[in-house]
Length: 475
Ligand code: GBH
Image 1 (cartoon, helix red, strand yellow):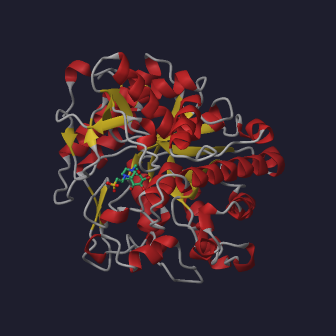
Image 2 (image 1 turned 90 degrees about the vertical axis):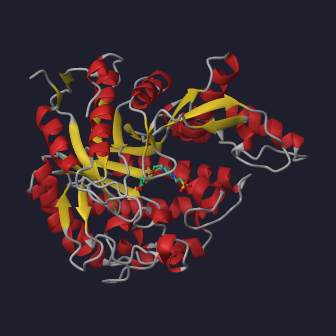
Image 3 (image 1 turned 180 degrees about the vertical axis):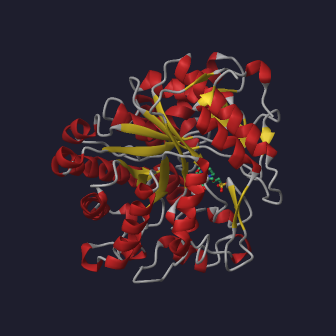
């Protein structure tokens, strides 16, 4: 199950963080219990937008079974658990007017249970489940969002910051902007691919930066934690080794990762190539200004360095080639003048967008190191889907061995400052638009019984061994 020729032996540094990840809407259930308000995912799924009309109303029932989850984590031997907070469980309509003590109690209980079992929490504030109350006020499109998010972040820092030392503001803001507001295949289901997508990102970056400074100014000195942001990126490999395709692949990385990373980890502003191309396309479309918003000088100063680490979610590789796109319709994808495809050599999963190509993670991590001056990196998600019919999940075992080994090479041979790795996912869960048809879990969950019985798959044994060995030492 491993490619012995390409395999590297060695271990990570002693304090390497090993963990597993989940998110609130995907596992908790209890969608309207104990004062929780509705989120955009409750509304979207109840609206019949998910495969087979499925919803996260019960999901893995972790709202009631969190102690079992902690025991599963303990059996894996992880040092960390990455989970997210449901904003509308903590503030029913998303504002300080509706703080919900029972929601706060739930997370206090979870955090305390983790710490009692020697597992450190890594907490994501926002993993896609905006309170519907804020969506009704304009959601991400309105810059009022920045203040609402800051209120929420401040409340969480003050309630949990004595015990939570690793914070992630946003999970994959790209998905919020592009899939949520560009093509509308995720909640809130808005399809405005030409400019809303850029305004939404602009507001998310400013919200992240504001929350980061709130932590710095009011909490860092006594809590001494770290605040980062998690960005998703596939590796973008030139389809052919030509100057055109190499430039196209670099552009694809700048439009996907650089869009968010350059303001925070680079020079404080959007990537030059994005500014240039979106402006030129906007002019051809007869607009008087670029569809890409501008940061003020003061914002650029605030953006720069506004994170203690970068979280990277990485799953797959794309092939990219140069392709001039028409300007008929303002459109984030067409702004890039690229064409994207997959290689049939890469191992297929249960998800159309995901093919296993282990060396992609090494190249991506090296790219992040080189572009952003060697930041601290946590791989906050990485994993493989199948149809969930077998506990003998050999493809997942192949995937984890291969990707974690390539991450070791990035660390040892390329000097990438990778501090930790969170496997996606601790258990099978609600896979967004695909409902319960794609399984990423190291633990199987039986969604056909009320008990939501959890059973370790074969990959649990593999991952436990990698953690115990802290990598792949000679034996
Ligand atoms: C992660 O996103 C998420 O953070 C996590 O919640 C999720 O469970 C996990 O991936 C597995 O999917 O529906 O064809 O338009 C990874 C990046 C972005 C990849 C959205 C899939 C949807 C493709 N994902 N994309 S499609």
